Every structure is written in structure tokens, then in C-alpha cells.
Image (cartoon, rainbow, N blue to C red; front, side, top):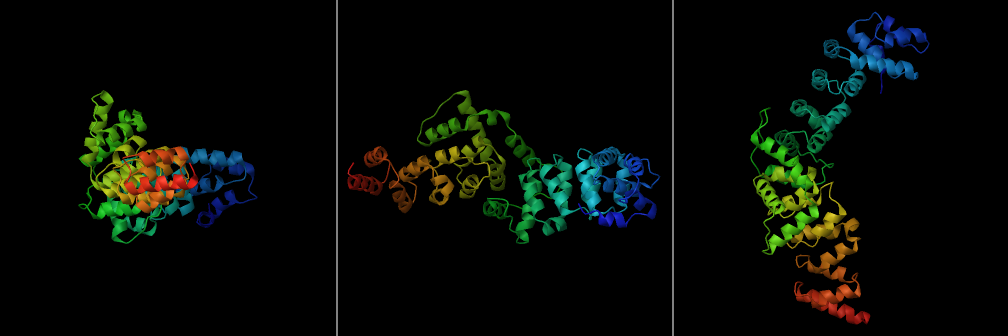
Length: 377
């Protein structure tokens, strides 16, 4: 934290307090907020003392700063505190929305501090304030990325921020499925511009936070959905819950589904991977939360389009697993050249099963037979 600018702004009296050779008693009094200084200088001095080598003085200064009345802090912010001081206040004033609002509105607040707030804040109103500063987001696109992954940020807020990025040709590399996010945004109506949450925001938040859905076992959900794909149905409570979730997700816009794929849980991804839209499916496969067990299940799903299976084949960290290789070799939707490649890795017993299977293309069964004969099994 560079406090040189803050030190330069101080009066000679305040500088004496912060000098390296100042008496510890003087620094201790100032750290306790007892120095006769105007509020703006007091805040700056406390910020400088918070970086003191002495833990006792530094801790006391931080405690005094974090406990100062909101009116004092907001008044000092209005008088143009140094950026490093503003950044320190961000860390010390979490939960004090009036102070944070002032900080966010300050053009001197460092971008890194705004990124931290965009990532961590749980206040929709404050996140909306961050997203309203388009100039700052264009200068620092990482703010948009942080907003996107903050579950507390409303969907409409995120949509507007992504729209801004797309409109100005920004590439948000921290969002693994940015191409899918971009496609979803460009293919739908313009995002809402008002600051109040709409029904679609509430709908998205409720689904994202659905505790009953999170309690469902993702593997069970996957099995139920695979059974339905071949015409088998169940009428238990959990099956009905899965049907309700499918219905709810089907009502969402593409950009909502893509963000749910990025932020949601394994159960939600099990539903989304079977969406009719390839953009949504690819977003699921690029989700940062996607686990190896999910990939193993998804790689055998016959509902996946060729493009999705080709993507799975391209990820070496996934195809190192034997089960993924077996699934890709036997999934009739896997591109033929890729499926043939994975046959070479199969055990004799699995090759024999592939050879006799009626569910794989004849070319795969024939290749399995030839390979088994070549190996002498």
C-alpha cells in the first residue's frame, strides 16, 4: 500500500506524528484518535499508522478507523482522500453500507479495491452502484468478471455489464464460457436498465439458492434424466422435484441458463447439460465447478451434441480417466475418429462388450473385433 501521496497531503503537524522518529507515545495517542486534527487529516494519519511496524500501534489505528462515525468517514471521503487510504477503508468498513457507497462513488478508489468489492459484497444495491460506473468497468474489465461470479449480483445487473463488454469488444478471459455468455447476450433482448430487481432476477436467485434442489444427489438426477431420455419414468417425490426444476429452468433465458451453469451446483448442471441449446451445454462443460465425476457421467449421455463430445475429447485432464475413454468410445454421438482412438485404450473385456453391443455404430463394433483379434484375445 503506497501511502506517500497521503503523507504529502498532511499538514506539518500531522507529518510529525507519522515521522519515523516520532515518539511512540505520540503515535499511540494518534492511533487512539486523540490527536487534535481535522477529520480528513485524522483519517489519513490513522491509515498511515495502520502500516506502522509496531503491531500495537497498527492494530490500534485500524480499530480506531473501523469504529469512526459514518458521518466523519463519509465527510473525509468527500474531501478527496489519497487512493491508498480509500483502499484501506474498503477493508475496514465491510458491513457499513453508507461508507462503502461513498467509497464506490469515489473516482479515486483503486480499481483493485473495486474488484474486491464486486467479488465479495452481498448487497444488491452496492453491486448495482459498482455496475453503474461504465467508464470504470471499461477501464478495468476484471470488475465485470468479479460481478459475474458474485451470486449476490442480480442477473439484470450482470446482463448489462456483459452487454457493455460485448458492445465495446472486451474479452473477459476469466469467464471460462465467455464465448457462450457473449452468444447468449447477443441473442436476446436488451437487458433491463432500471435499478430495481425484476421478476426474472428473483426467479434466478430463488433457483440458484434452492436448498431442496441442492439436497438432491446429482448422480441420482443424472440417472433419472437418462432414464427419461429412453422413455422410462418414475413418480416418486424426488422425481417430481426434478420435473419441477426442469420446468423452472426451461422458462429461463439463455443468458440466465449460462450463468446458472457457471454458478450453480452439480444437480443444476445435470439438468442444464440436457438443454436443447448448445450454448448452454457448452457453458456447463466450461463451468469452473465441474467435477471429474460429472464428466464421467456426461460423457456417456447420448443427448450431448457432437460439438460437446468433441470438446470433452479435447480435454486431456478428463480423457486421462479410463471411464471417460470407455464412455467416449461407446457413445454413438462421439465423432467417429475420436471414438476409434479410444478403442486402443480399452481392456479386453470392454473391447469384447463393445464388439457385441447393439448400441454402438457398426464401424466401432467392427473395429473393436479387429483390435481384439490383433491382440490375440
